[in-house]
Structure formats: C-alpha cells, structure tokens
Image (tube, rainbow, N blue to C red; front, side, top):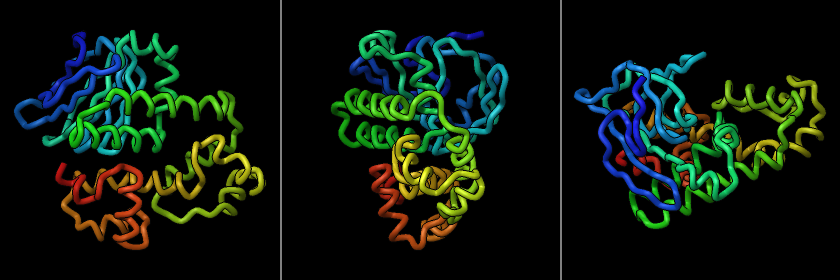
Length: 264
C-alpha cells in the first residue's frame, strides 16, 4: 500500500497552503492523470469535498459511487482506492495535522461523524472553498470555525439519538427533491408531529425547511458541474419552484451563484 505524505493527492494539485494546522489544496483530474486503482492512504486525517465529477471509492468494507456535492472524511492511514474517476473531476481537500486535532481537543472520529452524510458540512466547506479562490485570507480560520460548529451541533444533539431521527434523515435523503410534509414524516416514523417540531433543530442543526433546502442545493451541485443542463431545468429537477428561488437558495447555502459555481 502506498502512503501519501502530507498534502499529497492523486491528480494534479493546483493550490496548496498551510494555515492554523490545516492544509488545503485543490486537485484536478484530467485524462492524463486519473488515479489508478492501487490501494493508498494519507498521512493525516482529511476531508475531500467533491467539487465536480465523480469516482468509485473502495474501502475495506464498502464501495461507493461518489459525486460532486459530497464531503467525505478519511482517517489518517485509512486504506482506500479510487477507480473510474471522470476526467474533469475536481476536489477540495482539507487536511488536519495532529497539532490541529490536539490544539482543539478533537478526535478523528468526532470530525468524521460530524461530516458524514451532513448537507450542512458540504455547505460549510463550499463556502470555505469560495473564500479560498476569491480571497485566500483566513481560510484556516474559516475551516476551523466550520469544523467546530459542526461538532458543537453534534454534541448538542447527543450521541444517542432516537430512532425517528435516523428514519427522518433517510427519508429526506431519499426524497430530497420532493415535498415531504411534517404530517407525512410523523406518519412514516410513528412520531408525534409536536415531538418532531420540538426536537428537529436539536438533532439536525437547522429547521426542517432549511434542511430540505440544503439537501436540494447539495444535490444540485452534481447537475451544475456534471451536466450542461440549463439552470432552469436544474432548479426544477432539484425541487425549487423557479430559477430565482433556486439562485437565492444556492447563494445562501454555498456563497456562490449557480452560474458562478459552474464556471469555478
């Protein structure tokens, strides 16, 4: 197995910088530098935010198709391999040094759990990416605040969540571009609507409408980057009433206008 040193990724690195104990880099994949299928790992724990394209990722006990809009966590030294990566794929990598984890009294597991399948995480890291490409200053502070904010939300929710929380999360992720009412969530999970209303923000870190909006924006990223569809069509297929509503939501969540993100 190949162990990649700090801030090194398969592909072509466009930018690499260190701030606050966090390495950030942007990696692109052309036909000439697509990753091979050999098993490899990274020296430090890191998050990869897929900005464009897609890849098949294989770990010890799983194989997943990853595409633009996903934020993925890897432990230090965790073996994995990539194959069938689309030419034109682009990643934003956030690598945590041991000093960073120690300074803020964090754990790799905590960062991974706060990131996994969380549309708020994808949104936070996209905003950090925008700051990197347009401003460049204080990127380490932005990522630090994003990570600590995600961890605080998880701590507030508690480690042992009621069964209905996972059920609702799965339902919303499966039907992200549909209208799912509070009444339907209650019926499907056998939970009283008052209970869901009272505790949704605690467990999800935002309101129901905000969570659905974030899911729709997250999933629209794939269509913006991986297709030539008009933004009007993407807005409709992503569950928004019109392009104006979609544009406002996308800007609020990611910091980008949809057409700006397509060109980035």
